[in-house]
Length: 451
Image 1 (cartoon, rainbow, N blue to C red):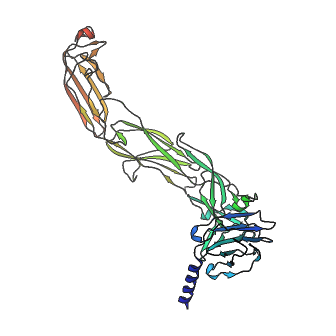
Image 2 (image 1 turned 30 degrees about the vertical axis):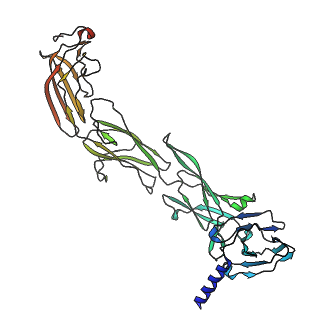
């Protein structure tokens, strides 16, 4: 028996075919004919048009045939689909066929020759948008979504395909509220209007959790909007609980040409490395903390800062991890930001043994160590009589081979360097510096070693 029914339905559907757009159309007559919205449904529905009529009472459908002699079959179908369509008898005057609209929603199939027009008619008066109240629903809200209890009428408007498949007509109800939007250029959160569009509302409405205190206004629907009869209702003030933040890290650049660069393109490189961390937070972020750890899972927090912005100097070899955390007043919406990895490479110290100040300007005319990740540095240069000619605590600084404004004579000089690397390596270096010949004509009178 079941196989027979299925076979019958399948045969009937095949017999109906997919409606073709032959140019014929249905129009409406009556006092409410101006309050009709035409919706083009998905092609899979098999329908040409869905007509939403504010009130079908007193309205008639009109179909104009190709000629007064054309044979026209007019049928109606319900949620069972076109396979169960039944014939209806319109009034006919020549090529004009007229059929009164029914109070209930209904589908219609109009067949003329080899073409069919399939429509669905919705009596909107049976699906009124009539909101009564909207109020926060804390039990169904969380840090990502905010729920509201909705009372009133805004339910789904169903229609049915030619095969009887249940489909929904979107009401396009607008839910407006205020939230915060992040401005990347200014690096701040600013007030912004938000709008969510929902197909329909049952008893609960859910929207993305706003980031600031706000009211929520529900306005609808698309059909009342088309008829200039929109209705709105607003909630009481809603207190924000959701927490959001944006972070960034900026490393202070150094342009010393004698500091060895690390191939790592991320944060860090050569110590001491200074990085500024910043966080922009939403309104509900009451508790804020930057955390620094040597462990990627932050099992142990080595340092923490409650400010949203701070600058930290990294001096330890290896990787240090930094992240921003935040929470609201009652601790229910924790936030953890991007984990920044700052890698400090092993220390290095390489010392040149010769240079030629004044010989060729811009070429090897300054004595500088080549280094990386030195956190402590002392350098002293002496002449052969033990007189100190130069000293520095900055490895980026070099000696130009001068005492005062005069270049020292060619010869052997001596350096003593003590330094400590970020990896704990201690350097104690001493050696010769050979100052090679220069042009007195270009550089003036040389300074004696006893100056």
